Length: 140
Image (spheres, rainbow, N blue to C red):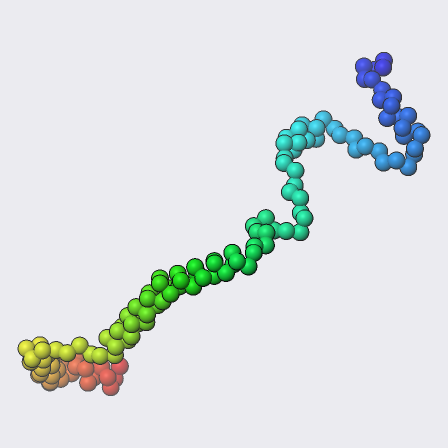
């Protein structure tokens, strides 16, 4: 006690009586401050083999009513939606397969544009052969 620190008398006596007993871990000043913060940590949950979201077993009557209500919900809500979905999918595939029908005025306009394009290609062929599509196909 002369150095200003009291000597641990009881712990020393226990160690002397039972030398095989485990000694408590000595802590320095830096670790004692961190232990104060760690002492707030909540205890770990007990693991008794069950998941926390597991429900206790239910009776057969309750399961039967739940099953019947789900069957009714499927029949009333999901089956009409499924039928409508399949019908819409069929319509989409039909529309993709059919080509759009042009009316007579549009067909005449397309024919006139194609005819003009052929005339201009022939003109380019004689005036500037390097710009013609025939030259590009053969030599490019």
